[in-house]
Image (cartoon, rainbow, N blue to C red; front, side, top):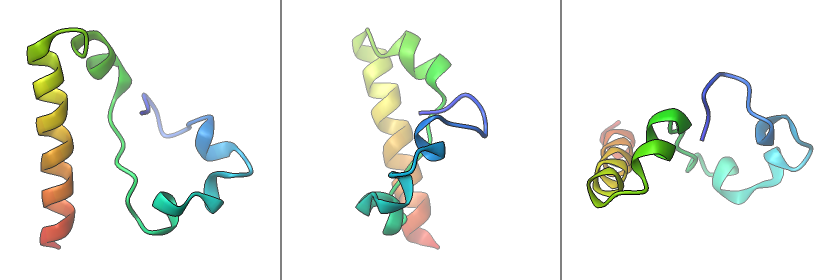
Length: 61
């Protein structure tokens, strides 16, 4: 999750060794919206819908 183009994890030495990153299976989600909404059922559903949409979009390319 990220709020900007700079993420602490992406700046770490292990980032390029993570298999999901190597395989192109990392999906960025803005934390502001997700963090606040994920406490409630509708927020969780919205987050899952967003993730599913990103996966479908990637697979259509």
